[in-house]
Length: 300
Image (cartoon, rainbow, N blue to C red; front, side):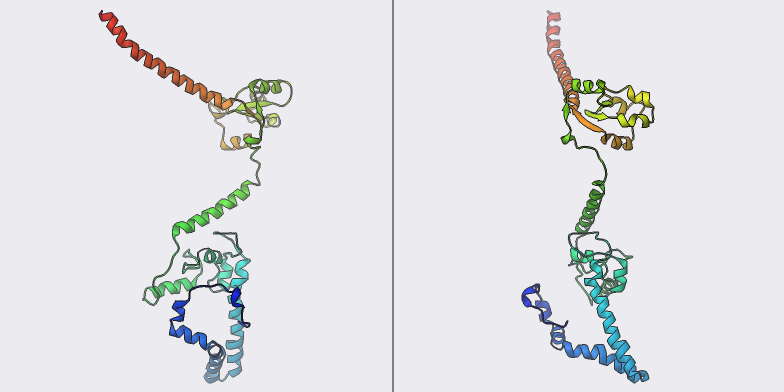
């Protein structure tokens, strides 16, 4: 507003439509004189000619009003980058907040504006304070405004969802989910049983994963004897089914007790199931092929 900016540091854009508008060109050419007349002289004349308060019109309706409006406007470049949330993108500083919207007369949903600048709206929810959006929408009903631009709803929701997922991931990182399977040692069944009987922890195998339940024995809702009975054994069927169908909380807690992976634990069971299916299919094919021969022999 005060100093001439370096044109090399100013962003470039196509303003050929504004350059072709005679009203905009006239306003740009006579901006200084228009500012003095409209912002200071006009309110001073209204108050002076209306009720004789020339100084009041100049100071309150002119200078102080301009100062207040400028401070409120420039909160878009300060308060809107400091107060509030970032529901669409957090790689930059713009934020959304109701207080900023009140101070700046509707420009408080700055995160949305920076992420989707081609959208004519600043706030997309009906309850959010955005009088400029409401005015433009009403003008579109009278043809004074037309071809209103809206960013695709699908892309807006993707940005919102990505931010929610990022927040969830940040919260997830603060919780203990147990040692990742890729970092656990692989033990054979014999090694698992040896460690269980040699006092190196109360180890239980569940779903091919070895868990040390030493610190949980006293807390087990079913009592100490029940959990001790499965030390050194595969408790998959008991844990995942039967009478005691353990809750999601139990599964989450179990993950924090992982100490190893059982070699061939899950893979062997899958292989056995596939092998049994293969054998049954072969026996079925053999019976199908033999029946005609038996029937022919009986007829002979």
